[in-house]
Image (tube, rainbow, N blue to C red; front, side):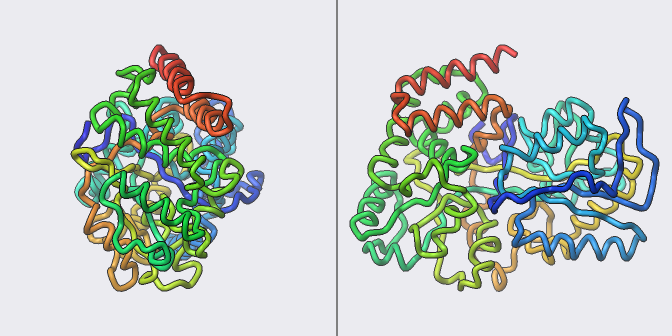
Length: 431
């Protein structure tokens, strides 16, 4: 699939801030008992999320407003920073241990699919009908959280990954306009290095942040049609286009277009380094305007964004969807759905400064979020490919990250990395 609709594998979001501890024992919501029974109803809800530390305050404020209106008490627990590397496992442990939340935030595709398949996530079709979500929410985003025909998630974010840059640092290197071709991107990187500036801020801790570079390089070398087939396991990874992408990936490290020691860097630190003037640009999405630029009290006018050039037709970027699921064994499903409906109101989305909402009428205000609004105007309707750590199940994603790491450390050649990836994907495809 090369159009603007989602591929069957879905998309993954990537929040990035420092990991904090979570006291899961303090469960004040639905305490799901073992043996598959439904918890008793109550006025207490628990929501489990991975919201950024910088933005969770706005979510809590809206939830408090809902609680005041409905007479509920909602506890919010968050595990920010590690994305799909840790959050799904933490949630799964809770659910299997009988202490799962009433509501949890989740990605679509192969990350959210296991919760739907195991029937841990409730079928939200009755609530879609009750609240009219089918008509108020982006239909393509809904498809990204529909699994085998079951609407097991309510999408509230649809995002794209591009290059977000520091205008002053590009100007220091004599770069007046963003690159329009891959060759121009490499030339820009060289000019930045010559000017004493690290080009691209990416960190290898957890694997998914560096993945954003490789998936872009694979889109460049393989093109949209082959890239999609590779993600679906329909073509062999042991091929020249993949070898070329891995060769370029290693080149970015060797040419110092990535930070020194990139493999050990935390995405939550290096991903916002462009705002601090430590790197020229980052591979991020609209969330970076609130979590990095505005959080640092910087003027958005000092920054810009561009779609990474692929030299392919159509030009696509990485994309994903995020949403919420309701515990199938919660005794508070109706109240949980009412809370989600409240959060999906345009006024709630705007109050939470959601920069890429799926809700009609909740588009970012150019006066408040000029960069997010600009991205939406320029690239909001552009086609995109499945972000790769949602394209694969977690086991395959983890193996994929190991291949990236081994390649950059010199343990694998690009050709060997391509062969190893084919072994990983073929084993998955046989399941």
